[in-house]
Image (cartoon, rainbow over all chains, first blue to last red; front, side, top):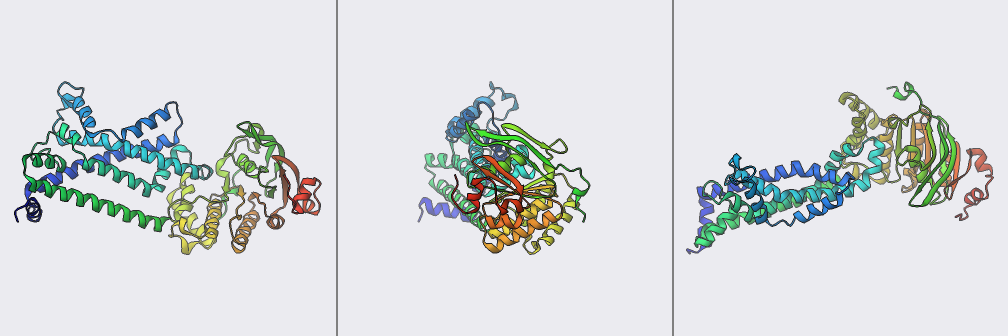
Amino acid sequence: MDGPFATALSLIASGDPALMQIISLSLRVTLTAVLIACVIGLPLGAALALARFIGRGALIVVFNALMGLPPVVAGLIVYLMLSRSGPFGSLGLLFTPSAMIIAQTLLILPIVVSLTRSVVEDLWVEYREQLHSLGAGRLRAVPTLLWDGRVSLLTGVLAGFGRASAEVGAVLIVGGNIAGHTRTMTTAITLETARGQLGLAVALGIILMTLTLSLNAAAWGAGQWARGRLG
Amino acid sequence: MRPVRDLAPSILPLVLEGMGYAVGGKTLLSDVSLVVASGRRLVVMGANGAGKSVFLRLCHGLIEPTSGRRLWADGAARAEAQAMVFQRPVLLRRSVAANLDYPLALKGQSRGMRAEIVAHTLDRFGLTALADRPARLLSGGEQQRLALARAWAMRPQVLFLDEPSSALDPSATRIIEEMVEQFSGEGITIVMTTHNLGQARRLAQDVAFLHRGRLIEHRPAADFFAGPEAPEARAFLAGDLVW
């Protein structure tokens, strides 16, 4: 039994340091990107739902379209910004985890913004008169609507996490897949598969899938619990 | 606890001068002139589509009249002196106590004062046992009771109610009506719509009868129920269909 699957299991069981390092970097990058995207995207999405201004429709369409932004293109954009000759080249961020966080934030942000807008817009229809009557204007309604839509919003945040943790293109371009520095689960799988080192690739694949599965299970459970608990 | 409204200058009476509302070329309410007197219970009656809800929303300021004027006694429509209970109350996805707290926090009241008012309100309306329950999971009757309690806790001078018990069973309806009478007894001016004749008879001190967006009659309830002048109102009382 020397197949890649057996190798993978023994790597996981032994807690191989290289493997652990890759997992921890991947999680750090993706979770930070999710956090930043939420901090920007939740209020932005809510504002987009409640504000009325010229060009609002166009902005909504752009954000909707950006949900399908190919990761390699996001990577390319960030690469151009951060490369030596780019506008932010002097920061020296290219081929660092920070660059990867920026690229993944770019990927997640449209998902969070679009979903938040749609959730908050629907809630606003139901809540508008009541909140107005209670004394909350549009601006004050934003945190209220975000909080009341928290269960639905969780799904969007999770979709963002899923997209970021699964993508290769963006982190590969701006991170460079440097061992021990910017190598994530997805870029490692790409490289190890190309090199014929299937053991590590399969181990990372298993972990990636387990992670996604358990996160979704947790979110689904939380959603069910909240629906029963909050109505 | 003494109600704060005793100290505040009264925003009533509310004077409506030829108030009308049209949207998209459709006139929903036209040329309504009447005075909402302080401390009275005014019941707005009429068939579906007569403009009852629009009337309430105009008075409360949720929409602005497209013609005529709405004049509050102290010049400004002080939102904090008004409250409204909707046909289907929108309760926030949080606990019963937190729902009571929310509008008080919006008014900028201190945490300590809010806690006191919330506890007092829960106690007064028999909601203390439900304080930590999610508001959305209450029964329909309990939800409307909470909506009225929330409105009361805001210490309004005038309370608007839009068909507050149309979705409730008779016993829940009775509770709501008792609450309205209690509020009225404390000096809160009541303006409510209903298509329930029995409810109108039980609660009304004054009646405004709307028909196709126009005010047909506005009289003390006793006079109105003794025999309305307008044929549309007579037909309505007799249970005939009036369009």
